[in-house]
Length: 193
Image 1 (tube, rainbow, N blue to C red):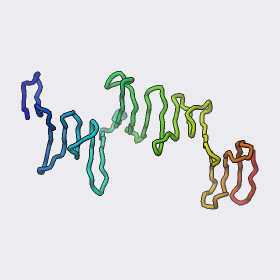
Image 2 (tube, rainbow, N blue to C red):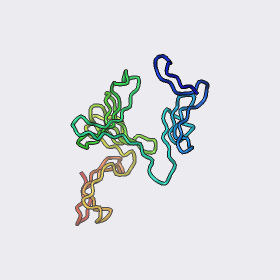
Image 3 (cartoon, rainbow, N blue to C red):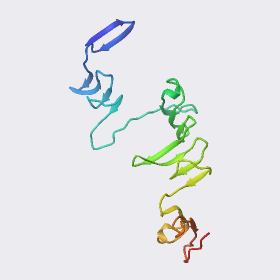
Image 4 (tube, rainbow, N blue to C red):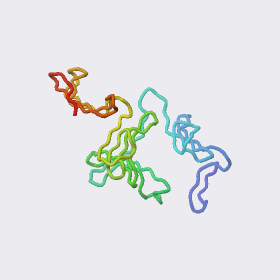
């Protein structure tokens, strides 16, 4: 280990050879910087640049806090890459404003994409169009089911039964044409458009 106050005018604490640097309390390792520069908190073998781990029967939490009360006191988590051009350039931003608005922003001219099961489900394109089930369209809001199931369904009262919808748009016609059906909560029938 090296303790050096005269290393290019900077203080240095660390290892000289290819060894990990550990910080401990109560005779237990709490943080590790391995010989490749990966940082682990709660683990001595981090697999990424920063790993925070605590195995216990409660929440493991990483908090970013700003308790200052003014309009500029935002709390940010930002992601940047080579397109950002610098550590202070644009990127992807997750932000909690001082007024408690929660923002997820792509600051580039590209889409914001949401997904489940490692599959894209929805995107907001750079011009503000919303795509569900598709990746491009010319409409402000576009839903594609990709199956014979309903693409859009609006229930007037979900507690009154499965067929008591107010609006159901689907592609289940024998001629593969889309249909829009209305049904009121107290009657029957499927008038199509």
